[in-house]
Amino acid sequence: MAEVIAGFGVSHIPALGVAMEGDGTGPAAAVFEKFAPVREWVRSLELDTVIVIYNDHASSFSLELLPTFAIGAAEAYAPADEGYGARNVPVAQGDADLSWHLIESVIPEGFDLAVAQKLDVDHGLTVPLTVLFGSPPEWPVKIVPLEVNVVQQPTPSAQRCLDLGAAIGRAIASFPGGTRVGVVGTGGMSHQLQGRRAGHINSEFDRTFLTDIVDNPRRLAKLSNTDLIQEAGSEGAELVMWLVMRGALGDNVTEVHSAYHVPVSNTAAGLIAIDSRTATR
Amino acid sequence: MADDPTGPPADTTEIPGTIVFDGRRSREGLPLNNLAITLNKKAERDAFVADPEAFMERFGLSAEQKEAVRNRDFHRMIELGGNIFFIYKIGMVDGLKVPDIVATMAGMSTEEFVEMMRNGGRNPHG
Image 1 (cartoon, one colour):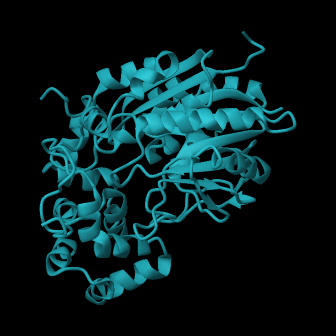
Image 2 (tube, chains in turn purple, blue):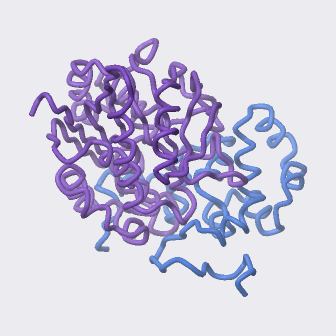
């Protein structure tokens, strides 16, 4: 059966993508130094497929049709033009077999995902791939995108996100074959891009979140949407997507790498890498 | 007044300096946000630049929304139901970068805002 090998929480700030595309010199050197070491571990895992939990930024979903959760089930995902041209990254190859297995597993459990067989993906999905894999001519993994509405309130609760992740974890464990799966929760950390409080950064909250996402996700799942907006900022509240990732990993995990940097553009940037293999314990 | 989209948000706790994008705002902002997402296409960006008044008319923006777009008043667009991930595309057409736009939300120059971020951002404890 397939196995969840590792989980990652990764910011998806466009400027983080720019920083991680380079060779680690220049103004982005400090960010690169903190985030790039994870790549060696990622390479050693020989992942086949990564499930990327991300949010669309007015690229593929307008406010005329905005699913709360949508899973991609396409053969491939092209980078979206977000209003200034598409990011210069490869088309991501889909793992449609795993997508449909997840759909057929979690919907009967009560997680009513929308299903997308065509989905252009924006920086929310592709920047974390750049952080983890650099700038190869083709991504070294297949992907399954899981899009979460964190743009329009009410967004799904932190608890619901953790529970969905757990259902995805169960589904992966029943997927025939030996697929080595990584799960990536994207977004955050604290930031606010509108209102007079724009520029809000809450490093104390972020650092606690980086610890608790590994050791105490159930505490994080108790945060209300208002708590998250208050603490992490109106856009930092997207950190609920890390809980979907964490839910898929199960209880027995080990932190491998953690990084934090303020600022990347207008945002606090964070990274967590978590080993969830049974064989290494 | 539950159906009045111009009224105050009914279902969000007030967080000072924070405009929560909820259903009330999304209803009011739909024309503005529909205009903005259309700018994902190069031909539409060209059409907006060529004749912004006709472009705004096409999406049925309110007079106030049109005025905010004309003035590139991003904070006002947010107050009128704009969502940041949509309306920033209007600024991108002008060649602005995200910090330029976010700085205006805070009522700061880009330089002041970038300096604040370099120093760790806006402190949550004031």
